Length: 89
Image (tube, rainbow, N blue to C red; front, side, top):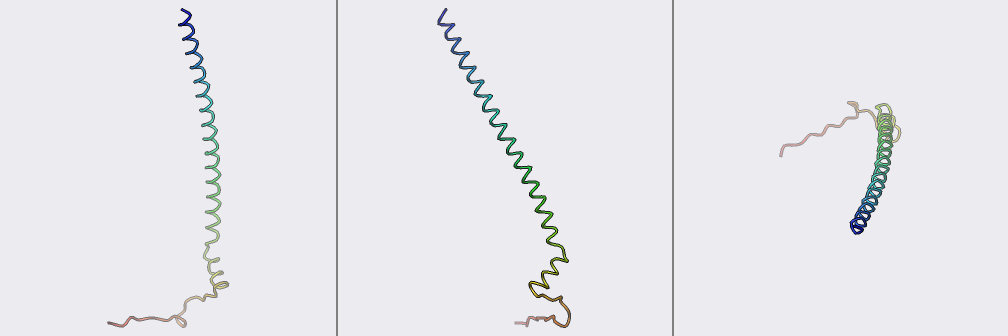
């Protein structure tokens, strides 16, 4: 009878240790999930900010100003337009 009791005690202890280990792993994985979710939310916020900045940088007025100022480009007019024709082979 004592062997059965001893065997049952060992089984209960092993089961208890397994439950504790499983709970620990569950909590650890939950914390990782929360950290990943927080990082995802931060990345989404950064993406929205960068998209707004990209839209503000690509306005036609700003592009025109940069083309005239930094690149010294002029608007196309008939006086400065050069037409290229391809000769027949």
